[in-house]
Length: 552
Image (cartoon, rainbow, N blue to C red):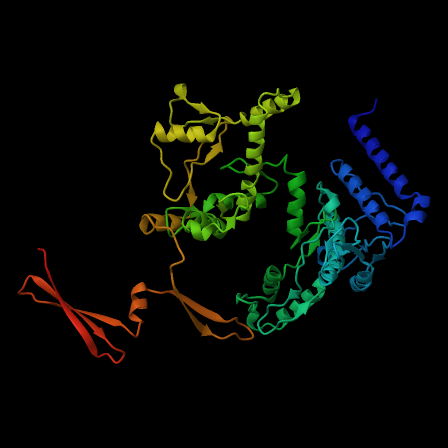
């Protein structure tokens, strides 16, 4: 009897042999392989996807088919990783050409634009991309041009990542390979937003080459992307910064196709999957295990609040978290809840909240149907599944930290512990928070989180100036927008936004201005107030005297 590892290897070999037998059947290929036969292409894509899904857990590699090159990654110096020994493949159906020159690959891929398949769907033409395991469809031919050009750019990133795994000595990716060639949506042209430039490109690489010229001739290393204006001491830092605007990526995972902005991101991507279970980097606050010390530092940032809410005592670790807090807690419901449910009057703040709400209607209909069919007996399978769900839900235990140890209350749900803390112990959450938060303890039970980590400056802001009840925000505020500087070659247009004072808005009305004059007579215990209406030239049109006694 062989060991389990030997059995798994034999199973992988059998799968590969079966797949090769299907792929290498010359009779079937001679009868079906036709560039105009879309059925053959769809069937080939389906076979490759099924194979990739089947071997994803076994970490098997895709075997080489007919006339395919079986290659191994090469160790390349980091400085030459994106230049030397790149084996770039055109994965267009019935093509499979290999290139060492990136420009030759781009020209070759552009020739496939005329070979896209066209499907007539309800009188509208649908263009189908024939790149391997892609299947992208669109009715816009210009979008299809951008999409195919992006495949050439993505093929280069895959070739860099293929050698990068050997250069960086990283383990294999374990994610699904059937989505390795699925690209982000490209609904519009790649537009340059540099000040004074409005060029558009259908090729992503042409757009990146154009942006390099802007960076090379930028005066003072200033980013002139619309609304930015950031300054850098060195040209290299400006180049890295501009990638955040253009979304340029430098390397991709050869197995799953995800592309990243630097080599360290690819390393984190692979280390999360291979080092994570045995890692010793554990968060001291929540107990989460991280693959590397860098990822642990990045994770720990979410526990430390760096920003304070100006409307309550809440603090947040990031601008996005603070914006979400304000949107939910302080913005008026009429202004924040913009996503309406098509089945009821419910309105959600975000699209994700709406997606979570819509299934409640189907659950209600199923509940009503079960009530109507209550006379019928449930099947054994349904009963078994319900018992399993109940067991899963009852695994967590919530313990009260305020009760004595010998009389400690334990609950199966966090809501029940919240009710216990409020009614029995009189606990309250700070102003700005909507609920209690619980974290797992060393004994496996969840207890109330009583510690909040904040920067010293944030705590001072909350204690000194922000601790007072606030009203909800609304859209009744008025702002003054003033242009301070026009756009130049190195800086964008600059505006100054100030909040209008309601009293100032009344004084700006030229047709009816009011002036208040008060005169205090120290001998008499009263104040004389004169209210005057004046015209545009400042002449008094009407006046009224009001006397008010002073209360000592």
